[in-house]
Amino acid sequence: MKQLLKELKKKIVEELQLEDVEPDDLADDTSFFDGGLGLVSVDLLALVVLVDRDYGVEIFSRELGEKVFINLSTLAEYIEENRKKDMNQ
Image (cartoon, rainbow, N blue to C red; front, top):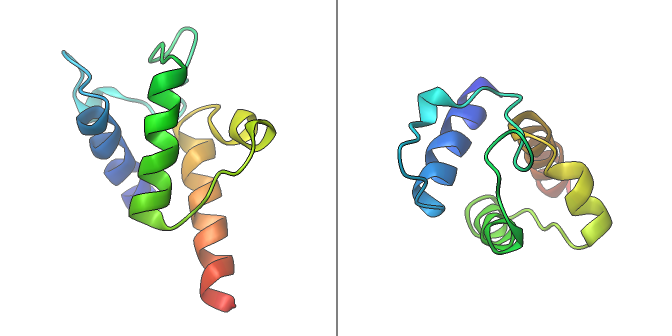
């Protein structure tokens, strides 16, 4: 999971064009919203697309998104769990 977190940090910084933020500056428990990266709904949509495109994992409802996009760790855990499910089918 450590490698996935590192990869996600890099992709998020690049995808959202976060100025003055380096991937290594982000802690695993960095919040996506208040007190963390301070993302807005359009940023969240870009992350949903990134996760689907790069990892083949869908976030198909607002309720699920609220659980998945708490912080970087929760996102990485969701991706790992759902990639494994897809591989077993």
